Each structure stands twice: as C-alpha cells, then as structure tokens.
Image (cartoon, rainbow, N blue to C red; front, side, top):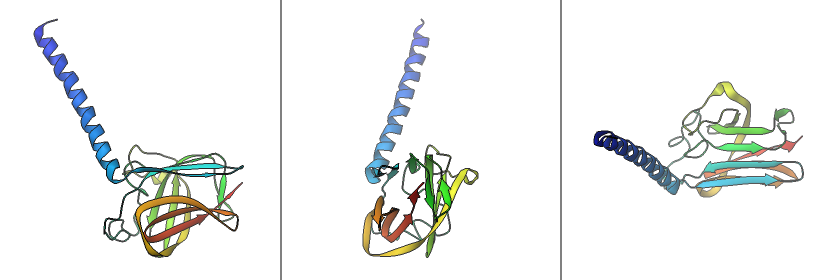
Amino acid sequence: MSKRLLYISVAIIFAVLAFIGVQQYMLYQTKQYSPEALAEYNNAQVMIQISYSRPSKKGRVIFGELVPYGEWWRTGANEATQMTLSNDIVFNDSDVLAAGKYSIVTIPNEKEWTIIFNGKIPDWGTEYYPEFDALRVTVPVEDLPGEVEYFTIDFTEENEEPRLILAWDQTKISVPFRVL
C-alpha cells in the first residue's frame, strides 16, 4: 500500500470518528438541558410506556410563545415522543387506539389541546406526518395554581379511570381512557 493511500485512509477514518464524536457531543448537550424520561402505566390489562425528553421553563412564557398555539408540537424536546401500547385503549367511549407503537404530537390552544397518536416515528421530533395519524383526541386545558418547571408526562387514576397527564408551566392536560 502506498503512503498516499495510507494517508487518505487515515484521514477518512479520522473524519468519520470526528463526525461521530461531534454528533455524540451534541446529543449529550441537548439531553443535558432536556433530560430523557419514561412514563409508565401498568395493570393486569395493559402496559403503556411513553419515552420523552423534558425541557424546562427557565422563566419563559411557554404556551402561546415558545410553543405557539394552533401549530403542531413534538410534545417534549429532542427526539419524537414515543408511546408503546400493549393492548387497545379507548378514548371518548368509542375512539379506539390499537396496540402498537406511536409518536405523540399535540396541537396546543388556549382552551383545548388536540392529542395526536401518529403511526410514523421520525428519528427526531422536528417532523410530523399527518397522513399517518392513527387517532386524534381533543381535551380541555386545565390551569394549574403553580408552575411545573419541567415538562412532565405521567399517568394517574381518578374514580378508577386511568388518565394520561401532560403538564408544563401552569397548564395541565388530562386525557381519560379505558382498556378494551
């Protein structure tokens, strides 16, 4: 092998390693400010897992400014928010979401939000493909008495009815569902 070919090979390997290193550093930096989280709901009938990243408020006006009203939002930060569902669930007494894996996209508004379960999971949360919407659910906004610093997805039960909760700043969304 000639010296020239050896130098070119070493340069290519170095460039590839540098590119991978920069990507890993950038991923580390973004996750440092918006850490990953996992929300889980488990009972005898269903297992639901939602993986997402948690951006912080940092004194900013969130809904209506940082997250504009009437436009789709990736529902968190960094990669697309993803939900894995072991069994079918029902919203609004008749809207069935089949077991599977979905990205969660939302359209926040002042009085209500549209929660979208989408069958396409993009690599990053900056793309949305409405043609893959599996189900849309509209729910009212609840005002919180205090601020939630980090965007939070969680589950709760009220009167034995499970609910998907999204909360950030002074806004809370509560999405009731039942298992088929």
